[in-house]
Image (cartoon, rainbow, N blue to C red; front, side, top):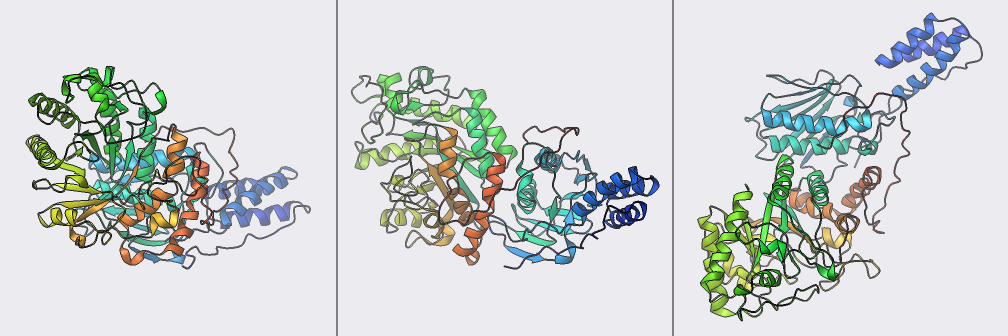
Length: 585
């Protein structure tokens, strides 16, 4: 992969010991940089007498040296996930100036993306980066976000053009603009991730990127039932997904160890069932306002929340709260272990279906996305026709709510319902039962336990995680194909890919990040990039460039030994300069 940055001019070395002529020479060199700050310093130096001229000339030399330095050594294709098409132009490198303006199409959704871009760039640059709109946005030395529904880029595609007059991001939708922004972010130096203002030349490599995703569904799952995580932690996970163009967050909201979402018609689900977690911790739950905050935050980043209410098994917390749902009508003790398969709601009692309809109805009303995940896995004590009869009835409840049913692949034997999606988590690609469900119309989200389960350990000495599906290093997370992984399932039946993170051993945000990163970008690339671009050697080099970004942003990650991690930049903080709004977008 060739370097796309031009070498740039060389600053003229001039001694400072001989007085005004040398100051003038330095000042002229600064003026030749063509930058306002260099010009201002240079004019001041030229007009001043000794000894102030020498002092100012030194400042001019320093500024000119910075401005005349080569562009940062970024390659236009040094992006994760790998872009679809890259056209470098080494003559068109560009640096973000302090007076840059972000100009957007007037559509409110496009303006929202423009403001997110500004909020991403302001903390590290210290630049004001005002956002304005125009009928026909042009970079004019800054950045333009152009919403063009005639652009042949698809629902999530985008084009980034870096030229000498600035940057233009074009897309047919706001989602496409957002993904273009994520690419722009990676083209800037790693210091752009700093939460405070730093000294840096914000150079971008010239050329064009045209990009669009392979699969419409690209996601990750966070289990908040085994261990509960605060809203702020979930929002941080949303940010990680957004950075790598994932567009679905699956929340596993209920399990034996805890019920995590308020249901007004069954209040004890949280007041009783939500007070436990693995290991005996205090548990917790989301109010409806909490959940809506997560949903809204995700939606602003073009991520759809997929809520899961696991049925008929994994329901001990519900049975503790409401023993009438239990087969024997006796409340079981609260459960804080990690074994599975022992609990289930009574499939023979009509009260169970009232419960299911109430719970799913309230969750559906809070969830604007099309999906409702009903679990369905590991219900070992509900077998055969009893199990399929339960699932078929619950599927109809979901459909009556205007939602599309998603469930783990154990739902496969049940009758097909239009739009039904199975999430396949097996470790062996041979699965005739799932293949039969696909033939009857089901689509698949592919989450193989031995490639995509992010709760698996990287190596035997990984301090947290499991190994029941095997160890999953970064290469194993990357080296498989969602489109062909399940034998005899055609690629067109694969809706996408998802990386689940179960939390039996995960107790903190740092734990979440350690297991997510660096494997999450590997799964993201499988979901976004074309199969033809799949290349382990190229990916590991591009992934290595993400390490300094995570370090600069204060993000925990596992320093996988198979990745040639780059050193994080030493960031000189600018002092005594006005600070701009650094609110998280």
